[in-house]
Length: 245
Image (cartoon, rainbow, N blue to C red; front, side, top):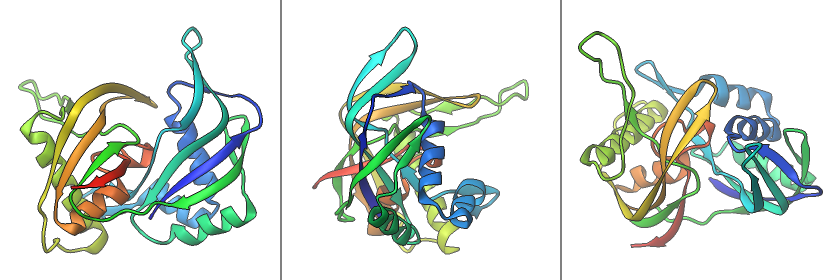
């Protein structure tokens, strides 16, 4: 299930430009269920020594200014963000937080919850916009034995297939079996904007823009709810459905 959360900033909210970790910690704390949050953050669903969190979240949307000198972004007034979960366990927590108008503690700032909406999406071929950057990579071994991370761009043929394989593994991790239909294709629609994300000591290359996605219903559902590509748990790969194709 995917939710659009609206918060009100009582004062300007100043964050580092690279604030994925701050936002991740704030959202997990906001959910409030320690056992569920611990599972999401520390464990996830396992498949062949890999783990998949099956949730993601967007960047923050709202009126802002950038302080380039100090590498800060400052938000004003109302801000919105999306949180998305493949499973339904989060629903009661979200509803309870909305009823209680539970604030979001974002860094040193307290944001008041103003509204919560359930996103209405159909799991059919559709046009989507990225609400956070999409990234997918492999780590081939070089001739000297070292491994090097290679990030795919949306125009490479392997990009779509790597995304598809990632969705299949997520399905396998959750259900413990192969999907009945595993067709999936993602195609860039118009211009793409590359971006670099810094998280802890990792440097991640991702892409923002619009995509057309096609395929089996379960694969599209997994893509829209769990996020596509890698690093979904830190807020990457979040998609917003714009229109059905």
